[in-house]
Image (tube, rainbow, N blue to C red):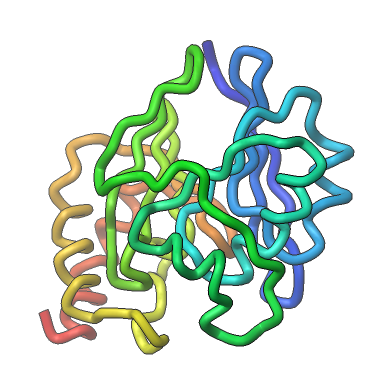
Length: 201
């Protein structure tokens, strides 16, 4: 069964929040600042909150949506601490990860298979959530760009390894980034060598 995707940029950083509908279930991906009202208008049967990584502009509305819908929060295990500790002191409402997803782990929720493909660098746990031929890639890859590696907990060497891993990925998923427009992996593979050189790899 094909999936239906809704997208809305949220907050000052225009962080893309996605709702993925599959087989009557709604998955909320990266609910950032002020995402709650849009999510409430857009979901019919929310079953999970999925975080690509732990930065505040991607997880800000976790806590309120969890309170409203009583659904589990899935987050890459390397970033779970960010949900609770607000490491950038932005006043992020604290939330707790219910399911800490291991690197490259496949999660089955009813009839849907999710793969959390681990691409660290921007953050320790930074992951792409793969659903069918779609990548919800957070701040790993953007159209014509990549995630920053100059933040606390970022790791330029890890980003180099992640970009090499992406270059070897055999399929061509549609990319739904955390900011900006969609792209495809094949398009971004044309840019990755530039970013590897930029990072010194």
